[in-house]
Every structure is written in structure tokens, then in C-alpha cells.
Image (cartoon, rainbow, N blue to C red):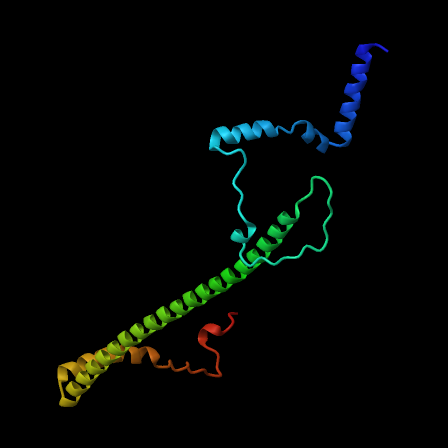
Length: 186
């Protein structure tokens, strides 16, 4: 075999491995030295700062029951962190739901209070109108009782057209003899 043929076989072998196991490509492209240089240049660090997980999550007491030590899987600390954050997120959701419900009930109560105030104001206005109307009717009744003829005539004029329209019309009288117009012509 020639040297060119060997190189071609290696390329096919590498291509086959990349297709069968794409995660192996990340091992070829791992540029840790480049990353460290970038961090040193950009931030003045060789690696990012680390913090104690107990500073982030005080009182942490989590158990991981099942864990596999396979390559390229999450670390135990990652799993613990995710479980704790998920639990805290659920608690946060419950607290916010309670706050939202409280705000809704306060809003409904304020709307009910506003409606009650409107109804009270409307009731006062209606009572004032009724009192004004009652006073006017009492004044008219006093004038009628005193015998104010002009007022009595004005009231009678207003009432009389209404009475005329309510009178019943008497039915026409019917006779047993046919009218002259109803006779057949010979």
C-alpha cells in the first residue's frame, strides 16, 4: 500500500468514528489553552472565580440517590444544585400565587366598595329628588285646598284630555232588519 492510500484509510476511519460518536469531535476541538489565554487577557483570571455552594444555598441538605460516573454527564454538585433550585422555584411559585390571589381579592373588594359608594350617592340623589317632588306636590295640594281657581283649571285641563282618551266607545246598535243598502237589487 502506498502512503497516500494509508492516509485515505485514516481519514475514512476518523470520519466513521465522528459519524458514529459525534461527542468524540468535542475532544478534538477542546481548546483549553485558548480559553485560559482569553480569560487571562479579558478578565485577568486563569479560571473563573469559584464560590462555596453553601454561600449560594445556605442550609443545603440534599441527597442524590442514583448517580452514574459516566463521562460527559452532570456532576453530583450540578444535580444537587438543580434539585435545590427546582424545589425553591416551586416554593417561590406558591408564594407568588398567594400574593396574586390576595391582590385579586383586594381588587374585587375595592370594586365592590366603589360600587357601594356609587349606589349610596345615587340613593341620596334619588331621595333628594323625591323630597323635592314631594314638596312640590304638597305645595300644589295646598294651593288646590286654598282654592286657587287658575291652578285648579290648569290641572283639570291637563287631566281632561287623558280622561277623554280612556272613555269607552259605545257599541253601535244593531237591528234585525237589513239596511236599505243591504237589500239585493232585482
